[in-house]
Length: 294
Image: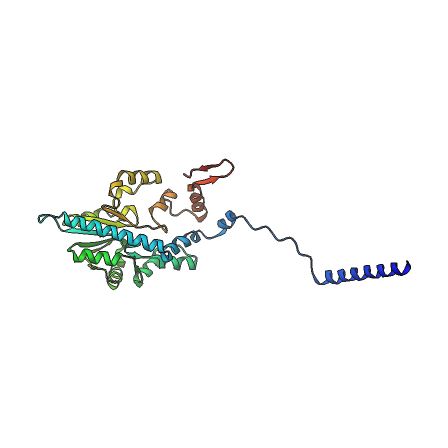
């Protein structure tokens, strides 16, 4: 009995010593903190990070590539129809295209801004334009050369500033775009409204179709101050899309974003994030319904 007690006691001491040794070399750790909710993490990230997937979608997705080809295929078919309907006494036909993210891909500028944690500013944009490093949108060169070969005039109506005109012409010409010259490349002068420039084209031409990535590339009537009003104008002109208007997808920027901010582009990142959040339609699991963004 005494021996058994001694062995038991010895075993207990050994276990205690082992525990002490262990506790002497390992400091107890506090429970791991719970990860922050995704909403909180998103609130800490730079607002520009929200543009990364949209930029990558344009640069990397086969879906964007296919949609761009689809747009120029539609344009090809509509131009053929316009050519077939022409009469000898008619004005010459013209095709009017926007430049940025219609025939030229600008997302390398956006990629630079994302990597540098920057947002758009006029000086870095001007420097990028001067480097003439844009690539062609899928299908753009082929379609516009077909138009040119068919005797159709091509006009590039862009809201790039006049200071970047020569660099834009050089970029277009290097990629094989036709009619890339001072007469046919029409940059912004005093206004981003393209109405006056389109009117100059119609003085001597019938415009067969217009192509762009923003609704303002087609008609100033789309330049409304609310999403509801813009959609109402789209509904009013619904028969023009895929016929006279050919729209390319662009989720990275545009007037659609400006109306989310009530036109206040100078709002802080915090304010813009709040306005984006308020615009979302979102499922409400508690009620089983969807809340409508404003």
